Each structure stands twice: as C-alpha cells, then as structure tokens.
Length: 312
Image 1 (spheres, rainbow, N blue to C red):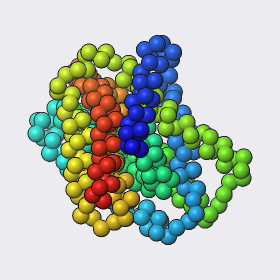
Image 2 (image 1 turned 30 degrees about the vertical axis):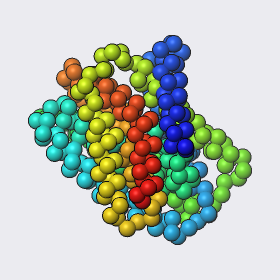
Image 3 (image 1 turned 120 degrees about the vertical axis):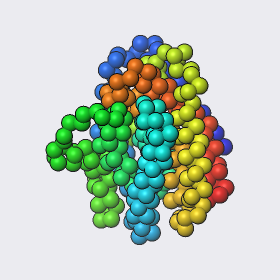
Image 4 (image 1 turned 45 degrees about the vertical axis):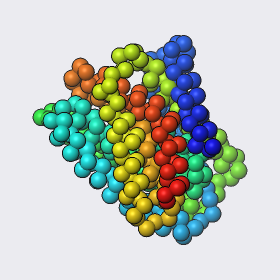
C-alpha cells in the first residue's frame, strides 16, 4: 500500500510541474535557478537532517559498507555500459545508454522515495551510498557523452576538486562529523535547516515535471526511446536484486542498493546531451529517454520495492 501511495504521489507531483510549465507560470530560466537552489541549499539541509539521529556503531559500519558497495557497483555499471556502448558502435545512443547505466535521478526522485520507504535511517544510508556516485557524476558527463575524437579541455587540479566536492558531497562529511560527535544545533537553527530541507523532495519532483513539459510530447513517442527505461528501470534492478540476495549485508543496506538501481535515469541527461553531443537527433533521444524513464518509475519503483521486501 505504501509503494502504491508513493507511486501516486510521484505522478501527481510530476503532473503539477508539467502544468506549471504548460500554463506559463514560470519562464525559461526558472528550472535552472530552481535546480541551483535545490542542489546548493535545500539538498544540503536535507542531508544534514538525515544525520540527526543517535550515534550507532552498527549504522556507521553499514555506511562504510555502502561506500564500498557504491564504488564496486559504479564500476560494474560502467563495464556494462561500455559493452552496450560498443554494441551500438559507439554512436550517441550507445553513449547515452552507457551514461544511463551508471547514473540515476538520485537527488530529486531517489531521496523522496527512500525517505518514504525506509525513513530516516534509510535516508542516511542512501545519502552516504551516493557520495562516490555523485563525485563521478559531476566530473564524467563530458567524457561519457562526447563523440569519439572530441577535443576535451584540460582541467586544472583545482577545477577537478571543485567538481568532486559539490555542496551535497561536502555536506555528507559535515553530517558524518555531527553524527559521530553527537553535536546538536540550537533549536531555531535546527528547525530552519529542517524547514529548508523539506522543500527538496516536492520541488524536485515538480522540477522533473517542468523538464517533461518543455518537450513536444508527440516528438518523444518513439519506440527507440524505450531502450533507456528497459535498461534503467527493468534490467539493472533485476540484476542488482539478484546480486544483493547473494551479498551478506544488512537487509536495509541491500534494499538501498536495489532502490538506487530502480530509479529513473538522471534528468540532466538531456541537458548534458545538448551540451556535449552535436548530433541533431541526440538531444531529442535524450529527452525521450528521460521522459519514458521518469514515467515508468511510478510503476517500476513500487514493483522493485515489493520484490526487495520479499527477497531481502
């Protein structure tokens, strides 16, 4: 029942975002400004609150295990993505599927889903799990999505570090320090952080709806664009669930990994494709892939959540 209710909430919030754009309530720059606000302010506040729980050695050990699993999982997904990339002869479809195999919408879809399903402990585990993924995500999009032979600007070490240490990543380390030391903010500050963090989930889903609303829906309805949800929403969760049944870890740890794998493709795929891939059809396919993957998640996330409860 919880998974079904969550599915309805996802659909409603996405539809609200879709209407907001189609009715002209916001302008072209709104989604970029909102993304910046959520990533740099609201999401770090939510992450800080996810660590406001009594210290537990077992939970800290599970966090360390999740970081290790995250690194291995990302490497395996990259390997699978490389295979798919070569099967598609290194064209733009292969590049997008490789990117999609590695990265999900872990911020705006993942956080509300995990919080609703597994509460504060689940959210704590999830934000720790995605730290290595988030660090690679912000620094690898250009190389993963650019055509073979493209010139890449050399980045200084400082630029690389700035890319790795985004506000959400830095906040995880701050949160861990607060968690281990047991430090608590004064009540007014604590409530302010909680209030700002609370806007992340609903506004993140509305943002997904706005990104869908910007597209001509008819132009996105092509069978080819179903490849991404088949990979991202179905194949990878199935493989992940099978693997996690064999790994001797806390059931909640295993469920967090499965839910990550069941999330839709990262919504910035279409923006990254526009920036790095020059083929005219690439941007349209990127938008279509995101569109179908987000729509599919309202059905597939509850499905994989139920299967994870049963098998893990």
